[in-house]
Image 1 (tube, rainbow, N blue to C red):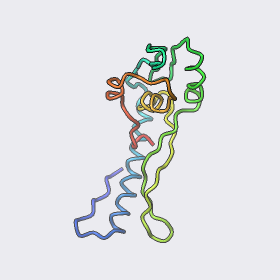
Image 2: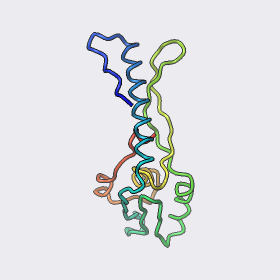
Image 3: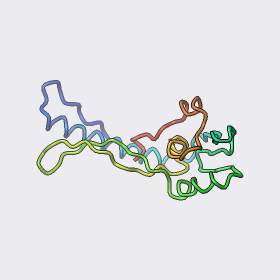
Image 4: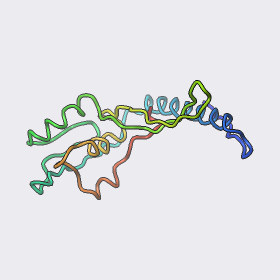
Length: 146
């Protein structure tokens, strides 16, 4: 899919909005196309800390493999492993009155996709978390994946 031509500096709001919509649509289509062509992905694994106990109580990887003996961690994680993790993606669209609306769209980041580990860790309830240094290096959900 060709990139839509970016409007010039003298473009009006409706031209910019149209371009943004076309560009977003292209990004979505490209992301779907790329996802279909990728059978392999980088597997990321991080340790999950229990801050109350001050120790690592399990690990999670990109494919949703949770390795833990903690029943509490398994309980809070099961829904995310089964259904994915809800993530808000900022979107812009034009309503029926022609006004630009900025809103968040919820997408599910499922095991096996880029950003799953980061979304999983971000959604865990206290006392579970990961080392903040590991969090910095975790890939996030790419809007083009939708």
